[in-house]
Image 1 (cartoon, rainbow, N blue to C red):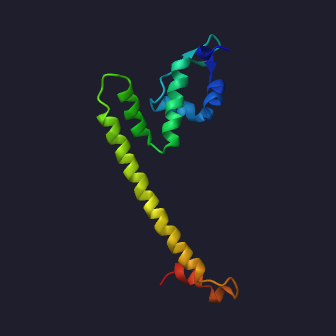
Image 2 (image 1 turned 45 degrees about the vertical axis):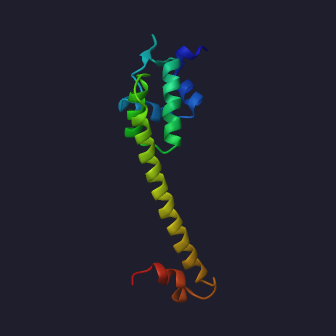
Image 3 (image 1 turned 30 degrees about the horizontal axis):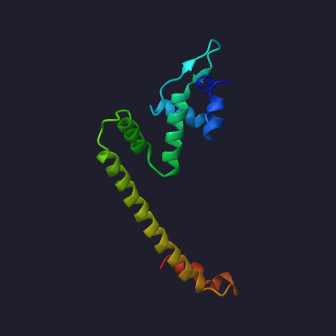
Length: 135
């Protein structure tokens, strides 16, 4: 089968994307509405395949759908400055680093709580439940 004549299941397998997600991306405008076969099946070309791979990679990196939409729009003109792409990426990186800091603080607190418990005794004497319960 040529890549310019992919059905939705083929596109899903080629990109590791669920069919329902592909339909959603079409609905929200990240993917253009596909051509239809004589039997009214969606058919996708190589551009749709590459666009979906781009979207998947962005999602794997944690970009939001709005950020992906902006990146896709920026990518349509090779003459655009990449300053906007840099801004979007920098903002996303700052958010990722904030989340990492929050998760590290969470891990530290959970370790502290867990270390206070010997694992024995009864629930009435559980230091973990005491630590996370209402004060």
